[in-house]
Length: 310
Image (tube, rainbow, N blue to C red; front, side, top):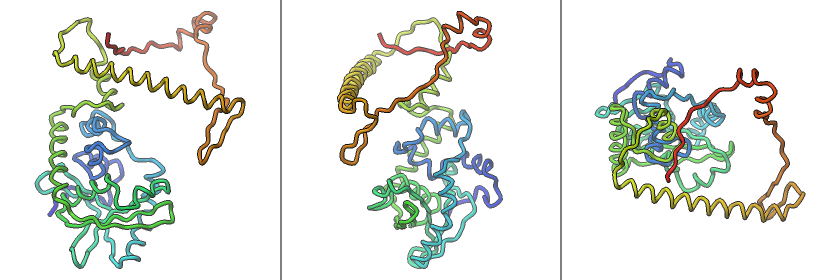
């Protein structure tokens, strides 16, 4: 049975975010497993470590997900006869206190006892992802919740495109839960000890390195010999990028020849566009020559470190 970290009924959103930052929530698991397209593990680590401001979810998708959640719950009850009860608390794993759960609801199933309920909304273009079951990121989310609560089953209901309703049952999977727990333990140790997780190629990793090593010393050091492997892979990747960029530009130029002066071409269900656009740019060289005082007043120097391999 899980512990209760805090009652959420009267919590304002900012306070709820702060409590959520005390551990790992269900939607964080896809990030830790490397399948989240919108956030990297480095960015999550920076948030949990207090190195980056908490990012409120204020997108249109999140807004309509919240608005439509009661409708999804009601339709689930209409179709199954199972009532969804609210659980306005943030739950905590009895052993691993960094594992948190803030579920959309619970269901009393006559055969399986108390079950997790999660309500989702999705746009029409994501309908294929739901065609054969619950997408992987939500599978991880509900397995995390079942790990925290001890429950053996979850229901996930989704409204797709505002007019297509589906729901699925997800059974507790210990073969998946144990690796999830280990991944979360490793990550939370990084948070507690302020040790960054393995560096990847994400923007968050780049921003983190640029911030903590923003200033350089005019010193040359000897690097480990296996750094040569990184150098070779870096150079090989760079060459592949150049080749692919040239190939991409070649394809674009061939389509531009076909378009000529026309802005749009149609082939099958695809559209190819080559549209005239304009933009205003400040002529800084001319401004500096003709209005040096104004130029000096509004110009500023930006310091950064340039990376290269020679």
